[in-house]
Image (cartoon, rainbow, N blue to C red; front, side, top):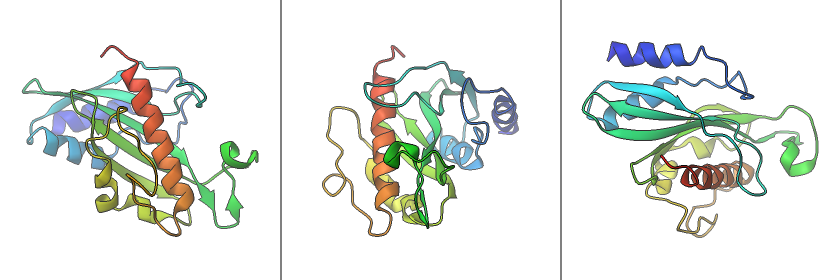
Length: 186
């Protein structure tokens, strides 16, 4: 177990190519969740070099990783940041054209071997409103999602009053990362 913590910590020291250096690429919550998925077995985490973007979407701002357990099981993780809004209004440049620094939250997705969402967790919420998107029970509704199914807020995904921007932001980002992952031959 200590070996995987060291490996994850060492990986966070490597600079990302164009990625925000403020993102923690070795969150403790990811280690706990991946250990649970692997039944407590140790795992090795290596970065996958997935670049580009899906049509009409921004380039990837996070990183994809391969997590391989000592027992041979393999899953894929994505760790990234979603821009949100602040109390005084939305400062997300993609939403209103404003270039001010925005509030954000960092999250990760674990994918199974079929590239379906296994789980989603928010581990760093740095915004004044919309914290409800970090609730594990709400995030559990993404489990099993793949690009073959629609994912619409208010239909397949529960809307949250007071967290509208955060809900739409995480849904759009998650869909984009799944489309990008499905384009890869992994």
